[in-house]
Image (cartoon, rainbow, N blue to C red):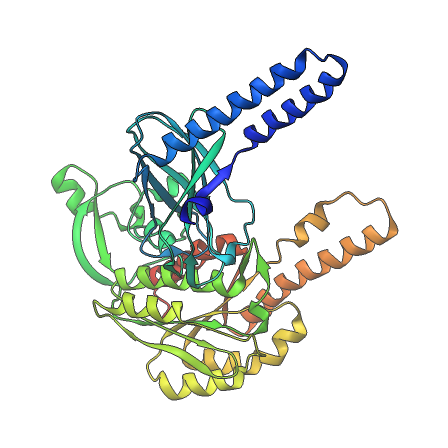
Amino acid sequence: MKFIKSLYLNNFFFYVLLGIIALFVCAFIFPNLYNAVWFIILVLITFLGLDILILYLAKTGIEAERITPEKLSNGDLNPINIKIRNHYTFPILVRIIDEIPFQFQVRNFKIAKRVKASEEKEIGYDLRPTERGEYHFGYLNIYVSSPLRLISRRFSFAKDQMVPTYPSYIQLRKYDLIAFSNNLYQYGIKKIRRIGHTMEFEQIKEYVQGDDLRTLNWKATAKKNALMVNQFQDEKSQSVYLAIDKGRVMQMPFDGLSLLDYAINSTLVLSNVILKKQDKAGIFAFSKKVENRVFAERRGSQMQKILETLYNIKTDFFESDYSRLYVDIKKNINQRSLIILYTNFETMDGLHRQLPYLKGIAKSHLLVVVFFQNTELNAIINKKTDTIQEVYDKVIAEKFMFEKRLIANELKKYGIHSVLTQPENLTLDAINKYLEIKARGIL
């Protein structure tokens, strides 16, 4: 039974069979072909038996394993490797059909490769998850064919392998040094306006490219006969809270990821930068109530605590209650802190409904509202219009884009900082805003 279940006839066998049928038809016209066709059938049966024999004679024809990361990074390409070792004494053709998790909705996954005799080969592919949670892999099915290519023998490995998908830790590594490198701006990664600095003097050091020329110490320069600058230390141990709106306004998808997941990925990276800058990082999420809370601290285990909390954020995308948010912040955050709020406003009316609560928060804390541009409207705005309907659509799209800028100006009127960003630039823009606030010393 096991033998029957693992045996598959290849397409090549059926092509030969079709050729034989065609020859039988021709034999009606040319009777001399009849005996030759039966000889071909005998040869086919012989080669079929030989193919079965050489594939099934070895108990362990091949060994294979699927190598996955310990956890997948949400929104990023994650490498999945398949290692195959050929124990046959001849080269084989392999077709790999991996039962990848249902979340990817891939129905036609197949990789075909040739593996030499006694060779160990590693074959890789990438997966890009777009939601957090557990991803279950099924069987790793490998169909092996000999050079005769008449049949395939199926081998199955690695059943029920589970890999969790966490917020984007790949971005975490990418931006790990962004707060400390003086030359990243040369590559277009860093674009921070350093308007000032705190007055806590640290040391005099030699000038390097990227230092503020206004901090030149002329007395030290004259003594050393080299440019020397005063170095000032950023004020440390300030509390920074990252608040994530997980209501219905964050359900909108861009490039497969919801705005909520973009915000979660950005929160993870920014928390790491905050802790590296010696500040205290905390997070919480809210919709109908405030939950998923991590209080602002600077412990060694803080990043792991934040990562696990972000992984476990779940929502039904209810309408967000900003009054609850205001009351919770007033009750639980007593020290003046920087609060970076990830949310989204599409219209001025939507902003005005929540503005009294935002103004209340801004009285006691430094509030930064991060919201999103609808990048899909760019395609409508930039499209050449030919009909009245297309002109109408373009005008409406431009109105929505303009209203986003009005929202930013309205927030500025009440002393509330804002970041209007595209989803793909969210992490970088949020980091730059935090570093700008640190550099200006306005917290």
